[in-house]
Length: 179
Image (cartoon, helix red, strand yellow):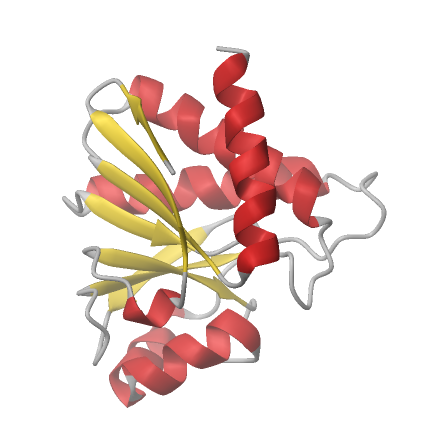
């Protein structure tokens, strides 16, 4: 599924983010940036030790922020590491922190001349953010960003599993109906 936003394209794809062929992939990292489970572990495993070496020099990352490293052995030349919020019921600023992950990741791409970026579904695994709510926040944030900034030409959500893909497809359909 894809939509155009100004001169940019927003795509949804079911798959494995470590195989993404965009210039950058976004890593749903933990605050240490030193690897973990889920998407984070997969990116570090496939990308190799070069990513970890650069992450050690960054001194971690705050929730809602993003930092960039090499892509190591990934097809993507860069990894944008962002730390999503742990879901605690929704009343502790989680939505704004999650939106900030997407904005700051796109800022990092734009500031580094990156034209294409692949995102996972941030915070919906071990951090327990409800997928439906996270999809709405992610897609609204990226859509609003692309309306203001045309430097990033392709944003692709690479969603692991049919359930995640279907949830994001429904959220994107609802969002585009209302705009």
